[in-house]
Image (cartoon, rainbow, N blue to C red):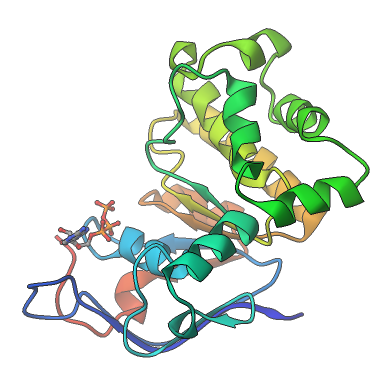
Length: 234
Ligand SMILES: Nc1ncnc2c1ncn2[C@@H]1O[C@H](COP(=O)(O)OP(=O)(O)OP(=O)(O)O)[C@@H](O)[C@H]1O
């Protein structure tokens, strides 16, 4: 099994901060693993996710994602890697409110030629794959046509998950996507997400405060144990 994320002696400080927020000697996540990343508020979970996704310039140390050393990539190469190979489910979903659920999902392929290519190789179209994903995630056909702002939080979350999954990126990063859900809906969502990831051998890195999610994940990482920096956490 190949490595999906490899990190060695990574250090990160926000500009102007006196101490580093993150100082992580080592972390390795294999392709196809499902990992829960936990830690108190302010401990740097979202910051670590955005470094892995290449949103922020890499910090000192080594950070390899899908065989690419992010330190060697400029911003636009990191943006391309993210668009093509990383599906990101944001805490607030970041859907375009007046676009339909389906159009929100299809947008993820707009600037991602590798995602479009994989759909072609799977002998499907963006439209068909979007409908199929939303069906699998349990969004009714009529809700699929509705503008995102008319959907419930749980429905928007499914749209955000489908947008991340369309075109089979190798890595899904989910930043507290279940924080607004009750336990039954949360468990159902996690199961659906796992099923989709399993089908494509997609790596899942999932952030949550929620200790009861542990039982769903084969591996849990506590950021406070991993991180040797003294800053962070409230
Ligand atoms: N853009 C930014 N500029 C400067 N500091 C930031 C920025 N984003 C986050 N921070 C700081 O970094 C620290 C960690 O924030 P981060 O959002 O990574 O934590 P978190 O563990 O994800 O928290 P939560 O669980 O509350 O979402 C906080 O002290 C925060 O103020």
